[in-house]
Image (cartoon, rainbow, N blue to C red):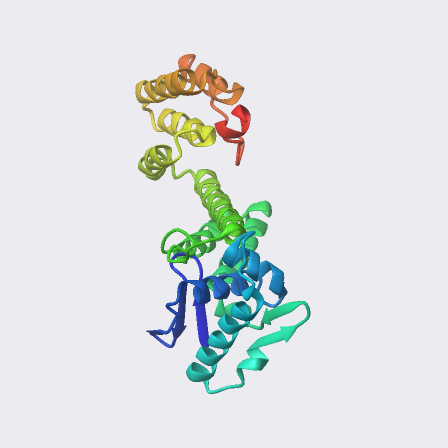
Length: 267
């Protein structure tokens, strides 16, 4: 049975052998069908993805050629009836797959299960599921696909899903009191996402919780400087609350889960 990887370079695996198409537009067509697996993708959507608003006169025929190439690949790799897998269904095509064949659907299932466990107050069980979900990622989604206007939107949405899952995993660790282990990861995340205010708040909080009040105040000062010099913003109420608690040696409540980023406040 074929398996499909989206959470990184797009790959088609037959056992342990890669058999993904190499032609760029065939690969992009497959990506679109996989992202909408078990749902009809209109031919018009495929054409828009491949040529944006300037399709050739033969656009529909050429897109159908890419469908034929994908069916031939499925036939060659499975020896089955490709028309039962890549189905013609008005107004376009449907790729019929088991959710276990696609890493994206496994990722979404694990995340949903873990979120339910977190909501039930079971972070010790949620954390491993969230780690398994994040381990399915091998890089930026569809990294080897030349994304057009449709796929670009899907890629952005996938990146958001990964961030949400990462934030849930951080929340699980926070509830379990793993503050020492979180410091290095939070510093790295701040380098990658310098305007994500929740990560800054968490770093100040965790440093204070492990007895590094001086480092916590330095982290706050750096954040305030970045906000002021680069965005013309003051620290959020949440950041100021934590800083004041550190200054006065008060009990610090953790930052609210999944707080909005600075980007959303400056938009």
